[in-house]
Length: 497
Image 1: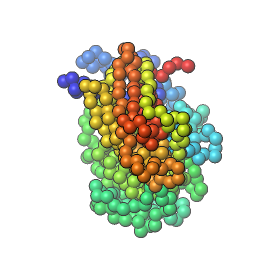
Image 2 (image 1 turned 90 degrees about the vertical axis):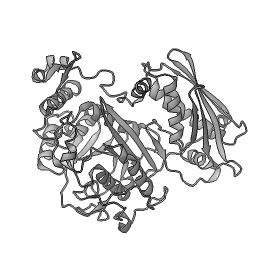
Image 3 (image 1 turned 135 degrees about the vertical axis):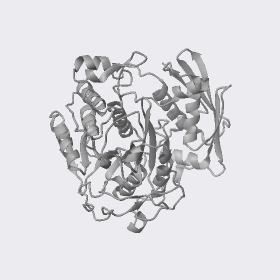
Image 4 (image 1 turned 45 degrees about the vertical axis):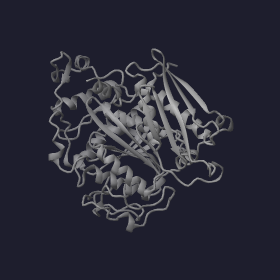
């Protein structure tokens, strides 16, 4: 029993900047403010106010009052359209905000601090552009194919004149061709890669794949047939900071209706496509191979965790420079996010005086009360495992022994490990050159990380190289600094300004 409770505590939580991370929606309070919501609220067996999550009208009214009460947005959708949950969609917005603010890849925008993105399949609800514009002042292009979705997206934008100039609703013609003539035409099949590895471009290759490779059969019968996703949607020369997508998760409407505990609505166009989300996101990946750096960060939500491994493998094959994944949590519902880029990563500079330090330490102060030393120890192991290191943890001594190969060290010297958030940061190793390379005699970097309890709410994390004369001490120092940042972001309360 104890083990199960611990695992529940270790689940990723709602994003810390999410408006609902500390203050979840108070149904009784909302019902007192909004009479139209009151009929949907009742007390559950525990005596807590709730709603019937299988009632579309209840979930739609909840979304309406949350957007109005907490975001100042006027919103509505007709019956049957996909009804989004506000906290979960906010998680996705804040994750993209983290990606854009990170130093994993340089900011190539020429528009200063202005951020512009595209929401693929924005739907009648237009939730991502509305939240991104109202919370962060971002500009959006929202795309869709059906007349109903386009009409109601336009209505939801025009109903909010304070942000309407930030949002463009763009119709995707189902028979449209690509803007440049180099990409996929609508209706052409794109086959989803199976578990087998296939050859692709190297991590450093920035050339556009030829059409023969772009449309290659990747070993599965599941194919995407449908309107353009990115190619044929972006205008010639259009540059964007990000794309985001809540893809059709399912292959059939029967599969979409398998969860009897919720009712979020949704039309076949919103919920279903041949091959499901794996086929749809694979089409996004192939479009990105042509568009390359036209978009700084490509992202999508993923409904099935089992698809992440296949999609990450595909991204490696096509030669992206960076991949990140995360988990979005809202109540008992989990979704995942995947992001990739073709922008060359920023180089990490290791200063000589830092490289001389063979012992490192830092304090984790203001530890959130649901976390303990064992949680931190497990995150330390996860951090280094994600970098491809060999890890051996000892829970009784609160220690992790880490070994990193020469190739991994060279890759870290070249790219750094900025932006790690434990939810799976991956860099694509490349050929090291010049002064960044370690000497031929170097084989691996070995060190130990220890976690000590100091006083309640405070932990000490110490790291020490096993070989004090190791030429990899600079890599160790760089990684340890990034470990400190990652653990503080995850476990410590933000100090008030």
